[in-house]
Length: 282
Ligand code: C2E
Ligand code: MG
Ligand code: MG
Ligand code: MG
Image (tube, rainbow, N blue to C red; front, side, top):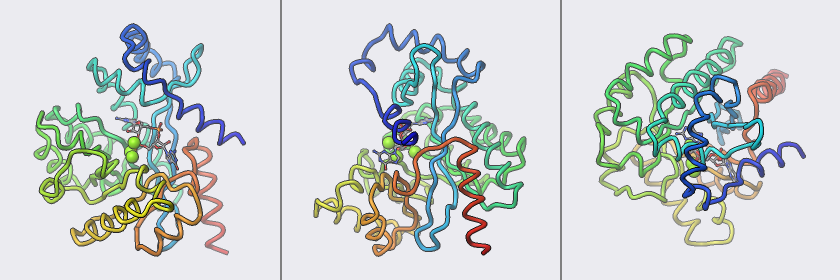
C-alpha cells in the first residue's frame, strides 16, 4: 500500500553517499531554499499508550521531497546539515511546525503530545531554552506537551553545555527523552545524571526480541531499570502484534513502530485521532 512505499522510500539511504562531499554540499546549498519552498515537511509517527491503547502523541520526523531527486532520507540531510553548521535553521523549522501542529490538535480538544528530535549540535547553543520557550509561547502550547529527543551519543558528548542546557529545558517544563537507548555510549552514571523523563529503547533490540533471548533480556531489564529510576519507557520499531503484546505484558509504557502506525502526514494523524475519539466516545 501507499504507506509501505512511503516508508521504503524514506528508509533508503546509501552509506556511500554520506561520505560523498560534493553530494552533501550540493544538498546543503539547497536546504534553506528547500525549507522556504515547502519541500521540507514533517511526518508524524503515533505513540501508543500500552495500558490504555490510546494514541497519546506523535514523534515529528523531517522529510525532504526534492523536486528532481525525489525523497531524501533525514539520515542523509540531517547529518550533512550537522557537519556543516546548517542544523539550526532546520531545527527552528521543525520545532516551529511540530509545536504548531500539536497546538492545533490541542485546540480541537484532543490530548496530544509532540516529540521533536534534537541534534547534539543544538546543545552548544546557550539560547536554546529561550528559543524553545519562544516557540511554545508563539503557538500557545503547554511546555509539558513537548518532548525533546536526544540520542545517547548526542547527550553524552562532552562538548557544549549539555547537562546545564537540559536542566534549563526541564525548568521550562519541557520533557527530555533519550533516543535509541542501548546503542550509544552512555554509562549508568550518566543515565542517573541526565534529566530525562523518557527512555526510548532502540529498535534493534525491539525488532529481534522475539527470536533473540538476549535482546529480550535487554528490553526487559531496561524497562525495570527505567521504572526504578522513575522514567517512562518507549519501545521503538515495534513491527508485529506479538511484540506489542509482549511489551504490554512487560509493562512497557509506550510503543512506537509500524504495527502502531507509520510516519504519516498531519492530515492523516488528525484523522486517526478523530476516529479514535469517536470510537472511545461510542
Ligand atoms: P529516530 O528519532 O530514532 O526515529 C525513528 C526512525 O525509525 C524513523 O526513521 C522512523 O521512520 C523509523 N521507524 C519507526 N518505526 C519503525 C519500525 O517499526 N520499523 C522500522 N524499520 N523503522 C521504524 P526516519 O524518519 O528515517 O528518521 C531517521 C532518524 O533521523 C531519526 O531516528 C532521527 O534521529 C533523525 N531525524 C529525523 N527527523 C529529524 C529532525 O527533525 N531533527 C533531527 N535532529 N533528527 C531527525
Ligand atoms: Mg527520535
Ligand atoms: Mg530512535
Ligand atoms: Mg534512530
